[in-house]
Structures are given as structure tokens and as C-alpha cells.
Length: 430
Image (tube, rainbow, N blue to C red; front, side, top):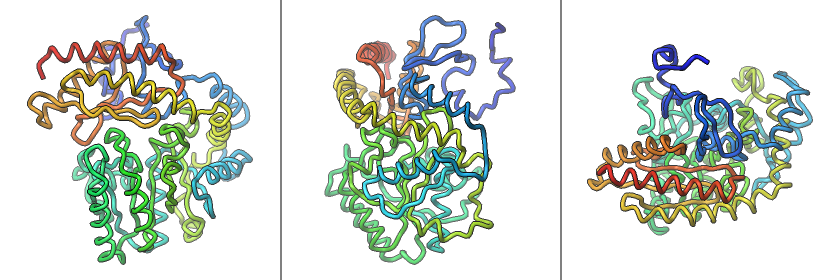
């Protein structure tokens, strides 16, 4: 087999995520918690799982059965409903803490779900301002990028957003008391009181994913839900990364008991085999837009292949008692991760369900050196056949989102490798 070199890769785009690790490495197969690369015998422990898009592990045997079944029945069929679509709609709505009169639309990819949610809010309210939060990540489409924290993307190079965005602090409960978070809520309330005539929506990740799994106080989300209802503002909860059981419940908002106007899902909804996303919203939002000229029709939206897989995945989650598994395995993994706090540069190890993160802090404790330290940890980890991710607006967080089916032995392997990585990095002198 011809060896891939950087010269051969000269036609590879320098802008995609294959450049985050080593673009000369070619993955040849994946199974469970492992990836195998061409020309290497030892597999890589994957603690990233495609940014939580393969929550059930790579090539999960049960998910594979659903995929093969779906492939035998469907390819891409546009403009027709399928039984799986209708059944999945009912399941997604009934899994909400407040089902009510909701409808569901299925775009392709998470950021298209964000686009759809913003279009629904604008069309229904006839307003064009969005409130978002520092550290937010909602994708890189033009609308998604507009409500994503500017520290993730240089927005100026792409021109001006077509709508106004007002940002507020996200109250990560590790660094913000509940009282302080309620003060932020008070500031939002004052802003809504003065400007509600021009504000269409508030969009939030109930737990911020790209920031490093930042968790707010539940009272903050409850208060935000009440404020948006008081001022008749559309409340959008983006659960694209943390939904589908990553936190231990299908939606994280199940743990908070709030009722957003729109909830967004994606990533693992179709088991990682189809980029299906879902926009679950109040009936009147969808019905406010005429079909002709709606801008919602799309070639691969409502794809029956992805919908059939997702429909089976929902049943699989219940049958395999994934909630109980995520709770038990997540606690065991987090307890073992906390042993890494013995290294002086590892701070604030935190987690919920099977979503974990920690902050790194160099001796200088400067943003630039902290980010360099995080990159060095990722680099050394990869050399030791461990795939982890840097995170946060300043790049000083590390994030782990392992398979729900990671075994006790694989957890021990992961922690041993992480320990070895930290020992190596501790000698470098950050």
C-alpha cells in the first residue's frame, strides 16, 4: 500500500478537522472504544467519539444491525413520509419533560438545526435579535456562527451577520455561585424589559459542549425559561452535543424540568451513521411559515434511512437501560479521573454522565501558555495512542466523551495512559 506523505496530501484542504492530529495517519477501521491506523498494530483509545456522534461506541453490533436493516429498505427518498419518521416524532416529543403540542423537523447536521430554529424564531416573532452566551458553540453555518462565541471563529473574515446578537455571561457553576448566576439572570431580565420589542429568541446550550462541558446552576435555566415566557421570547435549547443520553437522560432538560419553545438534537441521534438532526418546536412556530418559499426543504432532510436508524436507536436506549449504564460507568470513570489532580497543572476535573473535562494551568498561568500546555497534552496523548480533545474559548480545557459501552478494563487503560501522558508533560516545564 502506498504510504501517505505530506507531499501526497497537498490537495487535502488545510481547513478541515483532519489536521488537528496527524493528517498522514489513515484510519483503517474502528470498533468499540478503539481506532486502528494503517501500518500500526496497536490501536488508539478513542475518548472523543466523533464529538459525541458515536455515543454507543464504534461499530456497535446492535447499531450495525439497525444500519444494515435500513440500508436494505431505503436510500435517499425525498418528499415522502415514512412510518419510522412518524414513530420517531412521537418518541422525541414524549421524551421531553413537557411534551405538549410540538412538531418535529429533521435537517442534516447540527448547525442546520440551529439555522432552522433561528428561522422559526424570526418568522414567528417578526424580530431579528438573538441573545446568546459567552462560550457558546452552535456550529459554523452563517446563522450558527453568528450565535457562536467569536473566540472560536474569526467572524470578520466572512462579513457582517444579518442580525443583531447580544451576549451574556454563561454562569459555569464551578466558578459562579448560585447567587451570582441569579444576578446574571437579573441583568438579562432588565435587558429583555427594555428591548423585548426587538428580541426574537434566547439560544443556549444547557451544558456548554465546546467550552469544556460547562454546567450552570439549574436555577439559572429555570429562571431563563420563566423570563422568556414572561416577555414572549422564543427559548431555544441546543442539546446537539449533550443530548441522546450523554448526561444520563435523553435530554439534559429532563433533569431541570423546563419547557423551551425549541429543542435541538443531532450527533448520535442516528448512532453516528447518518448526520440526522432534529428541531422539536411548538406547533404554532412551524405553522407560522407558509410551505411555499419556506426555505426548509432540503435534498437530504427527513431522510428515511437516517430516520429508521434513529427510530431503532431510541428503542435500543430503553431496552439496554442506557441511563443506568451512563450513570454507573460515568461515576466510576470520574472517580478514577480525579486521581489526575495530583499533577499541579490539572485543575477542576468535572463531569456529568459520560461527559468529562478538566482545566490545565501552566506555571505562568497565562492564557497563551495554558493553551500551549493543553495542545502539548493532546500531542503527547496521541503519541501514546490516546485520542482526547482540547476545548474552551481559550483552549485551556481538555474534554473526554467516551463510549457509553467502555469497559472497566478500558477505563483503567485510559486512566493509565492519561497518567503517563501527564508524567511526560510534567517534565517539559510548562
